[in-house]
Image 1 (cartoon, rainbow, N blue to C red):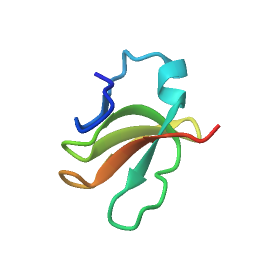
Image 2 (spheres, rainbow, N blue to C red):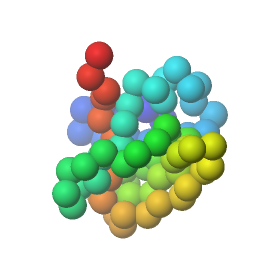
Image 3 (cartoon, helix red, strand yellow):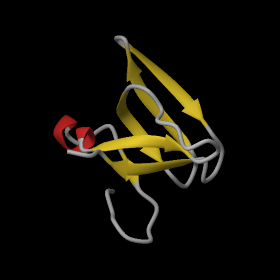
Length: 73
């Protein structure tokens, strides 16, 4: 599910790499980017899996702890 507007965003492993490359994950506690490429991410749960240096890392920032926003072009 990728939605815009008021609905929470969620990116799943089955979304194409091209779709996921248009987005980045930002922490809501300090508004910094979460490093890496998105594998999965869900704003509702605050959990994401990121590909960093050839390794997949699963991170949890708590409910509402992340935002998925469009990358600048």
